[in-house]
Length: 59
Image 1 (cartoon, rainbow, N blue to C red):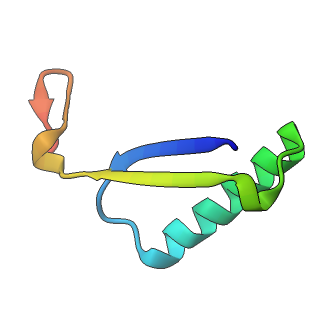
Image 2: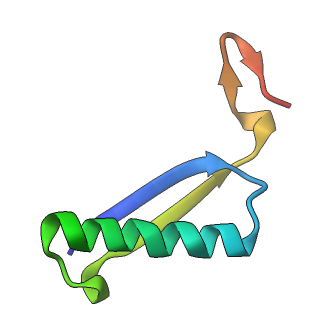
Image 3: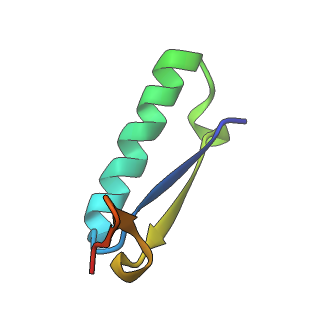
C-alpha cells in the first residue's frame, strides 16, 4: 500500500492536481507493481507566507 505525500505551494488548479495524482499513480504502478487501487496520494498545500527560501518568505 504505497502512500505518497506531496508538499507544494498552494495555487494549483483542481485539474492540475488530478493530472498529478493520475501520473504519480501510473509511475508507482509501473515501477513497483502495486495495484492502482492500493496507491494513495496526499497533497499538503502550503501558504507562501509560511514558506521561506534563502532566508526570505515567498509571500
